[in-house]
Amino acid sequence: MRKVKLTLAYDGTEFAGFQVQPNVRTVQGELMSALDTILGEKVKLIAAGRTDTGVHARGQVVSFRTATSIPTDRLPAALNSVLPRDMAVWQAEDVPADFHARHHATAKIYRYLLYLGRTPAPFIRHYSWRLFWAMDVKAMQEAAAELVGKHDFTAFCAAGSPVKNKVRTMQRIHIVSDRDLVLIEAVADGFLYKMMRSIVGTLVKVGRGVLTPEDVRDILAQNDRPRVGPTAPPQGLILWQVVYDNLTAPEDTPGSIGLTLPWGYVKISL
Image (tube, rainbow, N blue to C red; front, top):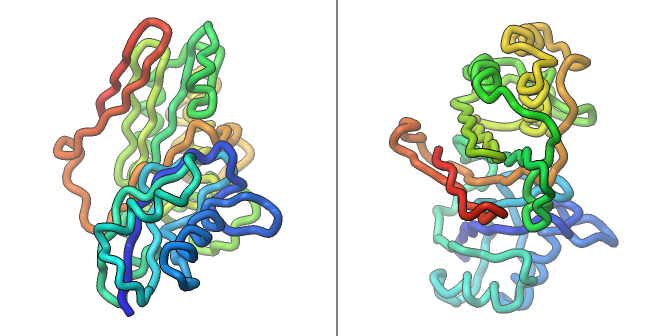
């Protein structure tokens, strides 16, 4: 037996979330079916986390034990040959027997895309939240800075979470814009249920001038859930990366996202 770690990407549009559920299509269900076909054995999957219906992933991580003799470097191609077209495994690694995809993660990186265009962009409608207001990005950046550090994020946790300890460390939040696009990237040691989407909804209220950065500071300090912005819709959210070691400084971790829009190709760098 050996333990294997897979990194996978998926378009969450037609999935009822990650976790397997009866009578609905899920990422876990599709992956387990593919593993059963390729490995000829049923495995127990451990995931770094669960994404909700409609949420996408570029860097979801799972681990499992297997007795297969298939070389690890051949597993992605083998699995992708039977997986549906809206998901793919892009990396497989052998890991120590005690590796745990969830417990050993030191950070997660989420990205959220806002589209502010007056003209609909149907080709990114499944990957962005279209808004109809101008955004004060500088105010959003100032509000985001209030969330950085170790805090009780109870106000930003949706009802229904079984987690009792809601203290998390937000390592950084970057907000950048290019014409009609605003990209929000958050890095934390963990995220509560719908925490990222609640943060985005609140930052949008700041961008519209409904809240101030000082209001966000008070909401966080007072656990004032009623003042938090609306939970942002799922389609703009991507689980970008799960980190298993210390993050380097922000300036040493460049990243970007590129999109083709009606006026041409746009690349936003973080």
